[in-house]
Amino acid sequence: MAKIQKSKSILTKKEPERRWLLALKSKAGRTASGRITVRHRGGGVKRLYRVADFGQDKLGVVGKVIALEYDPYRTAYLVLVEYQDGDRRDKSLLPPHSTTVGLGEKRYILAPYQLNVGDEIICNEAAEIKIGNRMKLKNIPVGTQVYNIELEPGKGGKMARSAGSTAKVLAREAGLTHLAMPSGEIRKVPQECFASIGQVSRPEHRFITIGKAGRVRLKGRRPQVRGTAMNPCDHPHGGGEGKTPIGLKYPKTPWGKPALGVKTRKKKWTDKYIVKRRN
Image 1: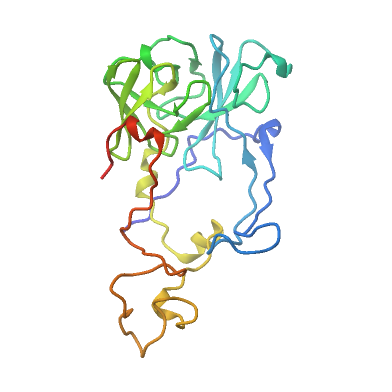
Image 2: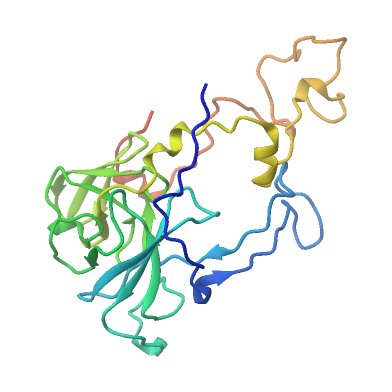
C-alpha cells in the first residue's frame, strides 16, 4: 500500500502562539510512584501542547482566521482566530462552567474542513449556516453536518472532534436533537447544546499508513508482546511447547479477565439518550 504523505503545504508558516503553549511532562504510563498503569508507553519526540478553545464562549463576536496550524497532539489541524473585541483578561467576565483557560484576542479552535485563512466565523445562539460557525442545535436545520458537539449545555464540545469526524442532525423531539454519530450510534442531545457547522479537518487521516515501527516509537508507543510468547507466570496464554494454543476456552487479559468481545460498559443514566447502539 502506498504511503499517504501528510501535506503541510496548506499550513501557515509561522511560530505557534506562545500564550497557548504548554510543556506537558511525559509520564511513560507511570504513576507518581513509578508504577506502570498503562503498558506500552514511553519515549517519543518532545512536543508542545496547544490549548484549544472547545467552548468558544465569545458569543456574537466575529472572529477572523489568521492561521492554519499543525498540532502534534491531535489528528486534526487547528486554526488561530483573532476576535474583534480586543483582549479581555478579566476572568470574572467568563460565563458559568466556561471551559476556556483564559480570555484573549487570539484563540486556537479545531479547524473544520475547507475553512481558509481570511474567512470569518461567529459563535451565537443563531447564526448563518456556514462552515466554522457555531450555534445551538435547536437552530441548526435537519440534515446539517456538525462537529465539536456539547453533551451538556455550557460544558464545551465533547463529541466529533477527531480528524474527519462529523455528525448529522436527524430530527428534533421534546427539547432533544437526534444525532447520527461518526460511530454509527444515534443519540439524543439537548437542543440548548452548541455545535459547529461542518466537518473536522484532515478527512484523509484515516488512509495514513504508518509504514514502519520507528514511526510508532516516535509517537511514544513501545512494542506489544503477544501473551502466547510469554511464560505462564507472565500471562494466562503463556507456556507450552512452541506455537501451541492458549489452552483455554476463551482468551484472557494479562490479569485473568475475559478478553475479546466481552462487554465491559456499565449501565449509566445517559443510556436513555442512546436511540441506536453503534453495533
